[in-house]
Image (cartoon, rainbow, N blue to C red; front, side, top):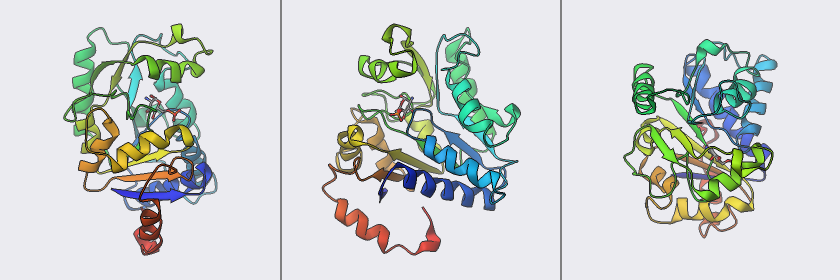
Length: 261
Ligand code: GLP
């Protein structure tokens, strides 16, 4: 995997927004997989600024969701559908019709998961999948010990993830759902280019294990090592436990600029 160390979160957001802009320039109807959480917000801000300035025409871009809570009432502000509408679809000036996600309120959740995997494939597959990382190394909501071959399915959140996400629910863990739908690790690895952004010291251990540890389901993000074109963008704080940080810096510095991410 390619590891890029940037000074801070804003620089990471700008770099990844440039990669998205380059994708849209060569494929205007690209399918962009988006992640939720705080980490990707600088990407969405940087991309929205490019659209607002006219530098990027995202009008044909299609957006798909990585994961979703199960059982939140329709329109709940913290459902990931609501978050993506608020943070991505509206700022980019897109319509809901350009957006697909798993149905977290489906009566038959398993059928909804299978339908979502089929819909992604029928849409031509994800061109670029944005990812954050949980403090326990999860991607999407693939908690530790998720099968590395898993497809979209229902998962139970760990206590740690519910504690981490309580800040979006009035700091009340009781409001955080126990169950979620998530693209599986196998589904995520089908994306043509997964890009993981991690910022802050709290992610440093998970990043070190993802990048320099063995491929192991206990650290779900480590499965990205199996992808032929995965990129991990980290700020200095999130890179602080990487033994090979200097090597990664030198490698990226020597990369011809035109190659992009
Ligand atoms: C949730 C999401 C993940 C996200 C993670 C980290 O668990 N399902 O996609 O990567 O939170 O969020 P944050 O970026 O806020 O730390």
